[in-house]
Length: 119
Image 1 (cartoon, one colour):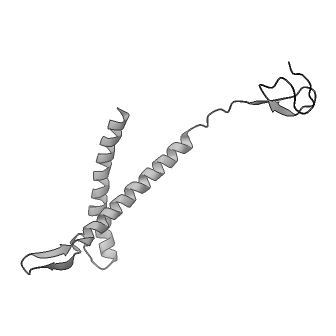
Image 2: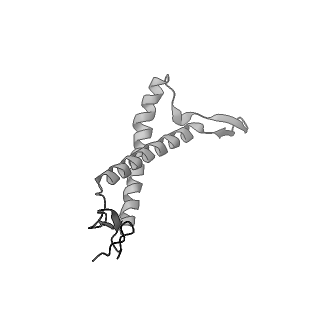
Image 3: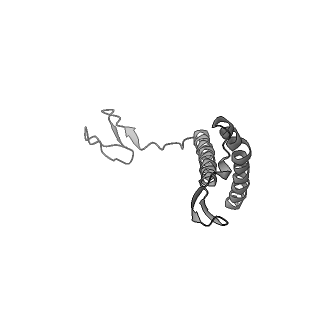
């Protein structure tokens, strides 16, 4: 069920980011770059005068910007979630020898340093 909710939220978030890129960022970048409309950027690679064959690299640039924004937001969310996670408590696997005070395995019956028997 969590995966289904994540997919639905991700799809909605993708639409929001696409709208942000197409309606807010690209016109702003177009104004900064001298009034260029990125969605209409095309490279004519063949065809006829009535039906030209175009390579629409402006749409590709918008898709790349969409991807970069989504990747940045997901990276920041995962980073935030990892910081919020509490570290798992570590189990003590050693103990001190009562005679020589050296660290030894918790399951040891005899100290490897002083050879005293452990209780």
